[in-house]
Every structure is written in C-alpha cells, then in structure tokens.
Amino acid sequence: MLPGSNGLNALLLVAVVMCALSVVTSQHKARKLYIELQKEKEYAQQMEVEWGQLQLEQSTWAAPARVEKVATQQLRMQLPKNGQVRFVKLNQPVPRPGAAFAHPENGK
Image 1 (cartoon, rainbow, N blue to C red):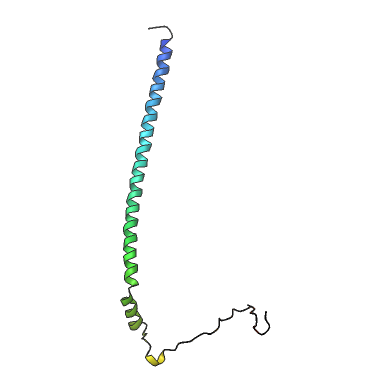
Image 2 (image 1 turned 135 degrees about the vertical axis):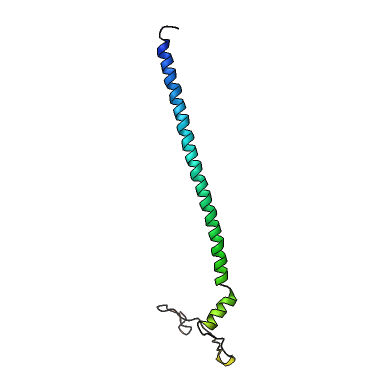
C-alpha cells in the first residue's frame, strides 16, 4: 500500500457508508409515502361510494311520488278543488319600497 492511502481509504469508506445510509433512509421514506398514498386512495374510494349512496338517497327522498305521499298522509295536504283556484293578473309592475317612479302626467 501507498503511504497516506489509509486516510484515503478511511475517507472513501465513510463516504460509502454515508451513501448507503442515505439510500436506506430515502427508501424508507418512499415506502412510508407509498403506504400513505394507498391509504388516501382507499379513503377516496370510500368517499366515492358514500357520494353515490347519498345521491341515491337524495333522489329517493325527492321523488315526486314520495313528496306527494308525505304531503297527503303526514301533512294532510290535498289538491285544491276547481272553485278554490284563483288567478291574479298584474297589469303594472309592483313598486318596490322606497323606489321613485315617474308619473306619466308629469312627464318625468
């Protein structure tokens, strides 16, 4: 061996050990992140299933036949008879409170 090569060998050995440790550390971090990614994908899948169930539930609750059934049975509502229906015709727009309208007689 050459004189002074022991110091170089020791330095190279330290460099190799440091590189090996950094590779192990980065692989460990990558595995942890992959596990976390898989958990998040599973959670997203569960949320999609729940979303589908909620949409189905909403469509069931809002079905016209169900609304009519609840209105007649639970709320005791009924359709108005022919004589009970009144139509109101508005000829002019309804003024808003505090709004000033121009009068046709004044020309304003």
